[in-house]
Length: 201
Image (cartoon, rainbow, N blue to C red; front, side, top):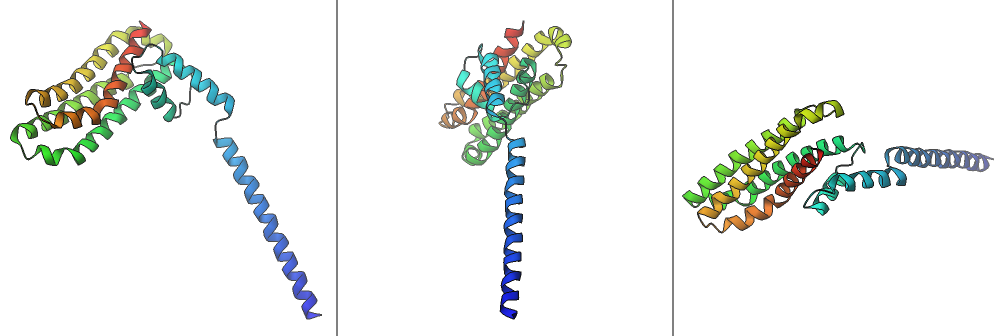
């Protein structure tokens, strides 16, 4: 009798656990489904991103960077604003990478050290110009009056980044190759952002 009772208890417990597992699996599936973009949404985002990237020189970089950022809107102005933020993030990441991989070698040579310090300064200036773009009005009614300002700030950001490269080029430092490689994506993204804004005018 005791044995039969134990078996019944085990069956009840096993059934309860199985039921809970099924509920958990279904719940996870529902949550995942809600959080994951569906195929139609991905298709619409991709189409919108490709359209806004059409006037850029580095289309592959443009499309990949925006899609990786998981755009929440297909509106061109929102995608352009996202491009600014992606570019800021890219420069920050490049600065960190340069500090980790190049700074120690640059510090061994006075000229290279001076060039690296200049790079840090002008890259921060480049980020500041990009932030001005982000902070500006991005509604359809506002953007028309700000296009020229955006172009000036984006051009300034690109010029600051080029100043960094030129400083290493002028002293004929071998570190120029590393710096070019590290900041290549951020330069391409900056160029793309300028092309997008220019296309608005």
